[in-house]
Length: 290
Figure 1 (cartoon, rainbow, N blue to C red):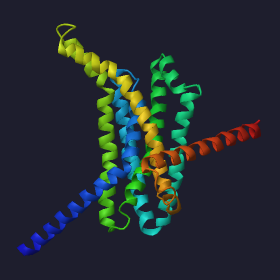
Figure 2 (figure 1 turned 90 degrees about the vertical axis):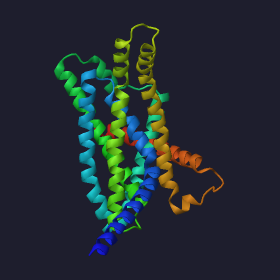
Figure 3 (figure 1 turned 90 degrees about the horizontal axis):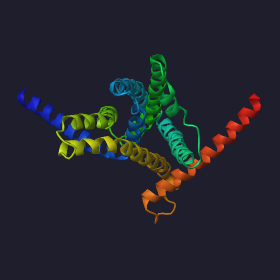
Figure 4 (figure 1 turned 180 degrees about the vertical axis):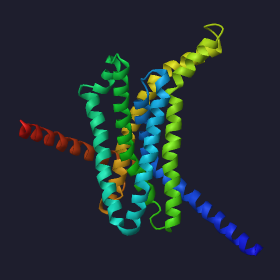
Protein backbone atom coordinates (compact mmCIF):
# COMPACT_ATOMS: atom_id res chain seq x y z
CA UNK A 1 0.00 0.00 0.00
CA UNK A 2 2.71 2.46 1.06
CA UNK A 3 4.84 1.56 -1.96
CA UNK A 4 1.86 2.28 -4.25
CA UNK A 5 1.40 5.74 -2.73
CA UNK A 6 5.11 6.52 -3.11
CA UNK A 7 4.96 5.35 -6.74
CA UNK A 8 2.06 7.72 -7.41
CA UNK A 9 3.89 10.60 -5.71
CA UNK A 10 6.98 9.81 -7.79
CA UNK A 11 4.90 9.87 -10.98
CA UNK A 12 3.38 13.23 -9.96
CA UNK A 13 6.84 14.66 -9.21
CA UNK A 14 8.13 13.46 -12.59
CA UNK A 15 5.10 14.95 -14.33
CA UNK A 16 5.61 18.31 -12.57
CA UNK A 17 9.30 18.32 -13.56
CA UNK A 18 8.34 17.66 -17.18
CA UNK A 19 5.68 20.36 -17.07
CA UNK A 20 8.14 22.87 -15.55
CA UNK A 21 10.76 22.11 -18.21
CA UNK A 22 8.28 22.35 -21.08
CA UNK A 23 6.74 25.51 -19.59
CA UNK A 24 10.15 27.20 -19.74
CA UNK A 25 10.46 26.32 -23.43
CA UNK A 26 6.91 27.50 -24.14
CA UNK A 27 7.53 30.73 -22.20
CA UNK A 28 10.57 31.51 -24.36
CA UNK A 29 8.52 30.90 -27.52
CA UNK A 30 5.74 33.23 -26.35
CA UNK A 31 7.98 35.91 -24.79
CA UNK A 32 7.63 38.24 -27.78
CA UNK A 33 3.84 38.25 -27.66
CA UNK A 34 3.85 38.58 -23.86
CA UNK A 35 6.09 41.65 -24.29
CA UNK A 36 3.67 43.14 -26.79
CA UNK A 37 0.71 42.28 -24.54
CA UNK A 38 2.49 44.12 -21.73
CA UNK A 39 3.24 47.16 -23.91
CA UNK A 40 -0.27 47.40 -25.36
CA UNK A 41 -2.07 47.13 -22.04
CA UNK A 42 0.30 49.44 -20.17
CA UNK A 43 -0.52 52.04 -22.80
CA UNK A 44 -4.28 51.41 -22.69
CA UNK A 45 -4.44 51.45 -18.86
CA UNK A 46 -2.48 54.69 -18.52
CA UNK A 47 -3.73 58.24 -18.98
CA UNK A 48 -6.79 57.91 -16.73
CA UNK A 49 -7.38 59.66 -13.45
CA UNK A 50 -5.36 58.01 -10.71
CA UNK A 51 -8.47 56.61 -9.02
CA UNK A 52 -9.61 54.93 -12.26
CA UNK A 53 -6.38 53.23 -13.42
CA UNK A 54 -6.70 50.12 -11.24
CA UNK A 55 -10.47 49.64 -11.88
CA UNK A 56 -9.80 49.91 -15.63
CA UNK A 57 -6.93 47.45 -15.39
CA UNK A 58 -9.02 45.04 -13.29
CA UNK A 59 -11.80 45.15 -15.90
CA UNK A 60 -9.26 44.31 -18.64
CA UNK A 61 -7.78 41.52 -16.50
CA UNK A 62 -11.21 39.92 -15.98
CA UNK A 63 -11.78 40.13 -19.72
CA UNK A 64 -8.40 38.49 -20.33
CA UNK A 65 -9.23 35.62 -17.97
CA UNK A 66 -12.54 35.09 -19.77
CA UNK A 67 -10.67 35.08 -23.09
CA UNK A 68 -8.41 32.28 -21.83
CA UNK A 69 -11.39 30.27 -20.57
CA UNK A 70 -12.92 30.45 -24.06
CA UNK A 71 -9.70 29.83 -26.02
CA UNK A 72 -8.10 26.98 -24.01
CA UNK A 73 -10.82 24.29 -24.44
CA UNK A 74 -11.15 25.08 -28.18
CA UNK A 75 -7.37 24.88 -28.62
CA UNK A 76 -7.15 21.50 -26.86
CA UNK A 77 -10.03 20.09 -28.93
CA UNK A 78 -8.42 21.28 -32.17
CA UNK A 79 -5.07 19.83 -31.10
CA UNK A 80 -6.71 16.46 -30.41
CA UNK A 81 -9.07 16.18 -33.39
CA UNK A 82 -7.98 18.72 -36.04
CA UNK A 83 -4.27 19.56 -35.60
CA UNK A 84 -4.07 21.10 -39.09
CA UNK A 85 -6.28 23.92 -37.81
CA UNK A 86 -3.52 24.90 -35.36
CA UNK A 87 -1.13 25.66 -38.24
CA UNK A 88 -3.80 27.57 -40.15
CA UNK A 89 -4.63 29.69 -37.09
CA UNK A 90 -0.92 30.33 -36.51
CA UNK A 91 -0.46 31.59 -40.08
CA UNK A 92 -3.56 33.81 -39.93
CA UNK A 93 -2.42 35.13 -36.55
CA UNK A 94 1.08 35.70 -37.91
CA UNK A 95 -0.32 37.82 -40.74
CA UNK A 96 -2.40 39.82 -38.25
CA UNK A 97 0.54 40.43 -35.90
CA UNK A 98 2.79 41.45 -38.81
CA UNK A 99 0.03 43.76 -40.08
CA UNK A 100 -0.37 45.37 -36.65
CA UNK A 101 3.38 45.91 -36.34
CA UNK A 102 3.62 47.40 -39.85
CA UNK A 103 0.62 49.64 -39.16
CA UNK A 104 2.29 51.02 -36.02
CA UNK A 105 5.46 51.80 -37.97
CA UNK A 106 3.45 53.37 -40.81
CA UNK A 107 1.47 55.57 -38.41
CA UNK A 108 4.68 56.65 -36.70
CA UNK A 109 6.03 58.13 -39.93
CA UNK A 110 2.72 59.17 -41.51
CA UNK A 111 0.69 61.64 -39.37
CA UNK A 112 -2.74 60.31 -38.46
CA UNK A 113 -5.66 61.19 -36.23
CA UNK A 114 -5.18 59.46 -32.86
CA UNK A 115 -8.83 59.68 -31.84
CA UNK A 116 -8.72 57.67 -28.61
CA UNK A 117 -5.91 59.74 -27.07
CA UNK A 118 -7.57 63.00 -28.04
CA UNK A 119 -10.99 61.85 -26.85
CA UNK A 120 -9.57 61.07 -23.42
CA UNK A 121 -8.25 64.64 -23.15
CA UNK A 122 -11.39 66.32 -24.54
CA UNK A 123 -14.13 64.62 -22.50
CA UNK A 124 -15.57 66.67 -19.65
CA UNK A 125 -18.55 64.99 -18.00
CA UNK A 126 -18.50 61.81 -15.93
CA UNK A 127 -20.71 60.07 -18.51
CA UNK A 128 -18.28 60.96 -21.31
CA UNK A 129 -15.30 59.75 -19.27
CA UNK A 130 -17.04 56.43 -18.53
CA UNK A 131 -17.98 56.02 -22.21
CA UNK A 132 -14.37 56.47 -23.37
CA UNK A 133 -13.20 54.23 -20.53
CA UNK A 134 -15.62 51.50 -21.62
CA UNK A 135 -14.47 51.81 -25.24
CA UNK A 136 -10.80 51.48 -24.31
CA UNK A 137 -11.50 48.49 -22.05
CA UNK A 138 -13.36 46.80 -24.91
CA UNK A 139 -10.50 47.58 -27.31
CA UNK A 140 -7.93 46.18 -24.87
CA UNK A 141 -9.94 42.96 -24.34
CA UNK A 142 -10.33 42.42 -28.11
CA UNK A 143 -6.57 42.91 -28.61
CA UNK A 144 -5.90 40.59 -25.69
CA UNK A 145 -8.17 37.95 -27.27
CA UNK A 146 -6.15 37.93 -30.48
CA UNK A 147 -2.81 37.91 -28.66
CA UNK A 148 -4.12 35.21 -26.30
CA UNK A 149 -4.95 32.98 -29.27
CA UNK A 150 -1.38 33.32 -30.51
CA UNK A 151 0.09 32.75 -27.04
CA UNK A 152 -1.99 29.60 -26.49
CA UNK A 153 -1.41 28.22 -30.00
CA UNK A 154 2.36 28.87 -29.92
CA UNK A 155 2.61 27.33 -26.43
CA UNK A 156 0.54 24.37 -27.63
CA UNK A 157 2.81 24.01 -30.65
CA UNK A 158 5.76 23.28 -28.36
CA UNK A 159 4.00 20.32 -26.70
CA UNK A 160 1.80 18.83 -29.44
CA UNK A 161 3.75 15.53 -29.31
CA UNK A 162 3.28 15.20 -25.55
CA UNK A 163 0.37 13.42 -23.78
CA UNK A 164 -2.82 15.48 -23.55
CA UNK A 165 -2.50 15.93 -19.76
CA UNK A 166 0.93 17.55 -20.14
CA UNK A 167 -0.40 19.73 -22.97
CA UNK A 168 -3.21 20.99 -20.76
CA UNK A 169 -0.93 21.68 -17.78
CA UNK A 170 1.82 23.43 -19.77
CA UNK A 171 -0.50 25.61 -21.85
CA UNK A 172 -2.61 26.48 -18.79
CA UNK A 173 0.54 27.61 -16.93
CA UNK A 174 1.52 29.85 -19.85
CA UNK A 175 -2.04 31.22 -20.08
CA UNK A 176 -1.98 32.02 -16.35
CA UNK A 177 1.40 33.76 -16.68
CA UNK A 178 0.04 35.68 -19.66
CA UNK A 179 -2.73 37.11 -17.50
CA UNK A 180 -1.50 37.34 -13.92
CA UNK A 181 2.13 38.10 -14.79
CA UNK A 182 1.50 40.61 -17.56
CA UNK A 183 -1.28 42.52 -15.83
CA UNK A 184 0.55 42.46 -12.50
CA UNK A 185 3.51 44.19 -14.16
CA UNK A 186 1.18 46.61 -15.96
CA UNK A 187 -0.37 47.54 -12.59
CA UNK A 188 3.08 48.37 -11.22
CA UNK A 189 3.94 50.42 -14.31
CA UNK A 190 0.79 52.55 -14.40
CA UNK A 191 1.13 53.32 -10.67
CA UNK A 192 4.74 54.47 -10.97
CA UNK A 193 3.79 58.15 -11.03
CA UNK A 194 1.39 57.75 -8.09
CA UNK A 195 4.13 56.09 -6.04
CA UNK A 196 6.46 58.91 -7.08
CA UNK A 197 4.05 61.63 -5.94
CA UNK A 198 3.64 59.90 -2.56
CA UNK A 199 7.42 59.75 -2.09
CA UNK A 200 7.70 63.45 -2.99
CA UNK A 201 4.96 64.31 -0.48
CA UNK A 202 6.79 62.39 2.28
CA UNK A 203 10.17 63.95 1.54
CA UNK A 204 11.41 66.68 3.86
CA UNK A 205 13.33 68.65 1.25
CA UNK A 206 13.75 68.89 -2.52
CA UNK A 207 17.29 67.56 -2.24
CA UNK A 208 16.39 64.45 -0.25
CA UNK A 209 16.68 60.94 -1.68
CA UNK A 210 12.91 60.36 -1.39
CA UNK A 211 12.12 63.51 -3.38
CA UNK A 212 14.65 62.74 -6.11
CA UNK A 213 13.57 59.10 -6.40
CA UNK A 214 9.90 60.11 -6.47
CA UNK A 215 10.60 62.65 -9.20
CA UNK A 216 12.47 59.96 -11.14
CA UNK A 217 9.42 57.66 -11.02
CA UNK A 218 7.08 60.44 -12.14
CA UNK A 219 9.31 61.45 -15.06
CA UNK A 220 10.05 57.84 -16.03
CA UNK A 221 6.45 56.72 -16.60
CA UNK A 222 5.84 58.33 -20.04
CA UNK A 223 9.30 57.18 -21.19
CA UNK A 224 8.63 53.62 -20.02
CA UNK A 225 5.27 53.58 -21.84
CA UNK A 226 6.92 54.88 -25.02
CA UNK A 227 9.78 52.36 -24.75
CA UNK A 228 7.34 49.50 -24.22
CA UNK A 229 5.40 50.62 -27.29
CA UNK A 230 8.56 50.48 -29.43
CA UNK A 231 9.64 47.14 -27.96
CA UNK A 232 6.14 45.78 -28.48
CA UNK A 233 6.14 46.79 -32.16
CA UNK A 234 9.48 45.07 -32.76
CA UNK A 235 8.21 42.03 -30.85
CA UNK A 236 5.13 41.84 -33.09
CA UNK A 237 7.29 41.64 -36.23
CA UNK A 238 9.72 39.16 -34.65
CA UNK A 239 6.95 36.84 -33.49
CA UNK A 240 5.16 37.05 -36.85
CA UNK A 241 8.39 36.40 -38.74
CA UNK A 242 9.21 33.51 -36.42
CA UNK A 243 5.84 31.89 -37.20
CA UNK A 244 6.49 32.04 -40.96
CA UNK A 245 10.12 30.98 -40.65
CA UNK A 246 9.03 27.76 -38.95
CA UNK A 247 7.30 26.72 -42.18
CA UNK A 248 9.56 24.09 -43.75
CA UNK A 249 10.38 25.82 -47.06
CA UNK A 250 10.90 29.20 -45.33
CA UNK A 251 13.08 27.66 -42.63
CA UNK A 252 15.62 26.47 -45.23
CA UNK A 253 15.96 29.84 -46.99
CA UNK A 254 19.12 31.87 -46.29
CA UNK A 255 20.44 29.63 -43.49
CA UNK A 256 23.46 31.92 -42.98
CA UNK A 257 21.28 34.89 -41.92
CA UNK A 258 20.90 35.17 -38.10
CA UNK A 259 17.48 33.99 -36.96
CA UNK A 260 16.44 37.23 -35.25
CA UNK A 261 17.23 39.32 -38.37
CA UNK A 262 15.44 36.84 -40.61
CA UNK A 263 12.38 36.86 -38.33
CA UNK A 264 12.25 40.67 -38.30
CA UNK A 265 12.65 41.01 -42.08
CA UNK A 266 10.00 38.38 -42.86
CA UNK A 267 7.60 39.95 -40.34
CA UNK A 268 8.31 43.41 -41.78
CA UNK A 269 7.70 42.31 -45.39
CA UNK A 270 4.57 40.28 -44.61
CA UNK A 271 3.23 43.14 -42.47
CA UNK A 272 3.62 45.83 -45.10
CA UNK A 273 2.21 43.60 -47.86
CA UNK A 274 -0.83 42.95 -45.61
CA UNK A 275 -1.11 46.68 -44.82
CA UNK A 276 -0.92 47.58 -48.53
CA UNK A 277 -3.65 45.06 -49.42
CA UNK A 278 -5.78 46.25 -46.50
CA UNK A 279 -5.56 49.88 -47.64
CA UNK A 280 -6.46 48.93 -51.22
CA UNK A 281 -9.41 46.92 -49.90
CA UNK A 282 -10.53 49.91 -47.81
CA UNK A 283 -10.47 52.23 -50.84
CA UNK A 284 -12.41 49.74 -52.98
CA UNK A 285 -14.99 49.31 -50.20
CA UNK A 286 -15.40 53.09 -49.77
CA UNK A 287 -15.97 53.51 -53.54
CA UNK A 288 -18.54 50.71 -53.57
CA UNK A 289 -20.38 52.23 -50.59
CA UNK A 290 -20.52 55.63 -52.28
